[in-house]
Length: 144
Image (cartoon, rainbow, N blue to C red):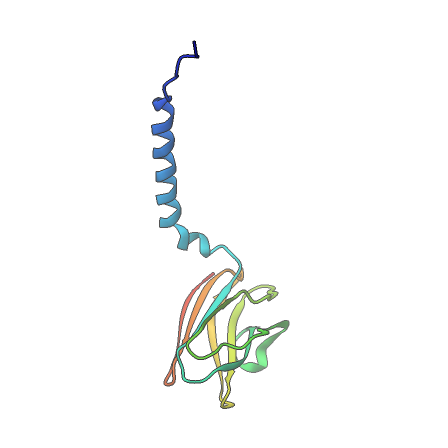
């Protein structure tokens, strides 16, 4: 004679499944909120006909002029952004106080552009999404 077969404890399994499903829904619903508190990241979407061959990010203070670039806060991306590709990176910057984050890039035709990707930050957290086309550069800031 074998041991009697025990039934599954449904009183434990069903509530556990419900808690897991609710947890997943809450996590995915608030994922963008949690992103605001992570280290600052930039996503470049190169929709132009040209490769981006140089990308720099840095900090500016005051009136955002190039003369106010904060000392020691420059990050150079070590790879190109080919035409039609997307690149995400987290620039390693150091900020004391408050400032703005800029992005400067050069395409393979030698054309350089300078754009503010986070107009105001104290914590270097959040995201910026930069879309580069042949005609314009658009920036969506989600930074703190």
